[in-house]
Length: 286
Image (tube, rainbow, N blue to C red; front, top):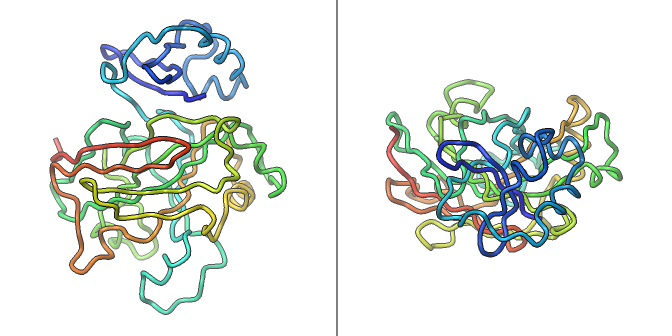
């Protein structure tokens, strides 16, 4: 099943994406499930399937405004330097990491598929980072790796947009450059684990104006999904609707000589065959 969050005439709604549009679930399965996060927390996927079965689409995708599939996650974790060869891109002769690099993003820093991502007024160094995202379905703390898969509800995609010169303002953090409003995107929907097995392997491809810039596979992750869930849950309780962006492959714009920063009008696409395409155009900050 593919679950989407969206706006219709300014009203937030959610539904099931089908080939010809979206079946609205907001009112079909009752007030107890106010949004996708509530649906996940209530373990009500079967209710959603039953409500959507045999229904004609209520909306065409082009007639709605897509939001990030979980517009209000409690936690949006981001993993850095997770694909093989990524460590070498830093050219600092460092050993391979023993533990994953980690930072967080605010929900206000991402938009849905089809919505503009914004190049900030204060920087020319907006960059793309295509990533696979795992969505937590079952709460847990101290989750062993062998049980980690039980806690994944599904997967989506992220353009983990980064403002490169702002990543180095602090000595120990990258938070500033990762949290410019509307600088990244998540979507277009969550594909549930029964339809897209998180164990993979999964491809991840990023294109800018049709040119492939990044291409890799989860087979080459240094810290696989089950490791990340076990690691994160050691210090934090994972909650339904939490999202983990699992790292970007080599080929971001900063790694070219000269760097290839995103410009207004550029179209960025992040794709994985089992999930779909996350597509956004770059706009000036409003």
